[in-house]
Length: 97
Image (cartoon, rainbow, N blue to C red):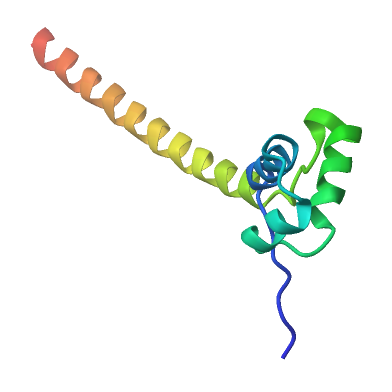
């Protein structure tokens, strides 16, 4: 059976690199403690230095999930707005009579 590749969030990668840069611990020790493969931490550090803010963009799953949630919330708010408009119209008519 094939093992699945581990995926790490952007925040995890940045924090791991910060540990490497600030604690003085050797990279292999941080990798062992964090369950990261050998040499990966140094690659992350190099990528962070090269790409800066735009490093580790991810594969979009979290953005897609957030977008779906926002669309659902938007639909609910539109429905509530429609209900409120109808209620205002009904109460306005009753006052006129």
